[in-house]
Length: 354
Ligand code: ASP
Image (cartoon, rainbow, N blue to C red; front, side):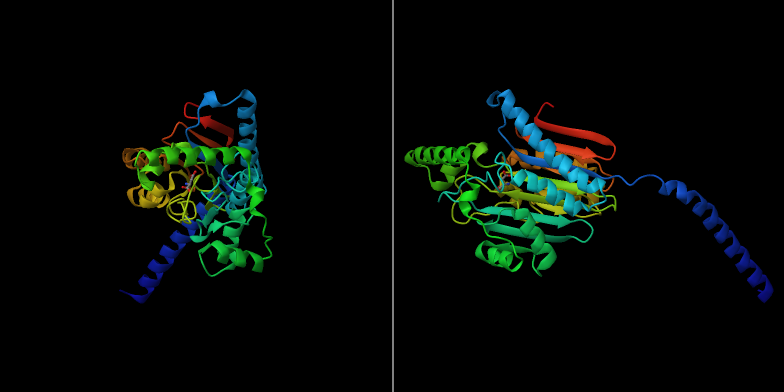
């Protein structure tokens, strides 16, 4: 090929490429004008939640608290804050309320104390932080966040987690701060039932299995998408009523109770933790989205209804993706839940049929 022909050909090609770039660049400002979506979803536990057990006043109070959590997280996103900050802010509202099994209102262990678990994960980097079995931390989700941001570890437990808290200037509080009368009654009832089951010659495991679901569930969590396009998930819990032997549930286990990855979805779970750990629920949902091209709706339905339900795993999840789609499947009678996005209004629900 003649040198000149080659150069001519090359410059023609470059010119064409430049023109393509110029014309698509001319369209870009229009695309950029579309506001980036942002959204949040929260849950306050799934379980045997029957309408007949609510007075109108009690129902209104629960709905108001769920709504407050949604609005608090949404406001962070609306002001340009990160999904991690929105998740933390929404969960703090629920932890500080005695209605839910996290922070104030956490269930009692067999030894009549409170042991709390929490975790948080950021979808952009897959960084995560978790605490398990902490007794003196007012807002366990905040400590999980500090583990993620300020330590070289992912999960800290018990006294070690609390020593770390002190190094971060977190005040340790009296375990009695988490006491509530209704949770104490629930512990006594659960012990009575276990005693009855034992006297029928059932072993500890069978006696525990015989407990109704309401003693085993009731956690809080949030998932969010921020206007920078990053998703996050967080979960906080008092665990299971009457738990013994330092039992840890799924909530602080990354992949089981909490998971977030920008390339698939963010999930926070609530339910019978042992099943959620064994079936790696949160990560399984996101794996179906990432590797099988499923929507979050399909993936959530499959894991909650087709995988967990047949083996007796009760509970639910909240899921969000990078487009701001939200799905909230559960296989129990109800799940305290709520959501709001930059293009949909606040929605709060408790029972299955709403
Ligand atoms: N998943 C929690 C646990 O097993 C309980 C719950 O969600 O209510 O510790």
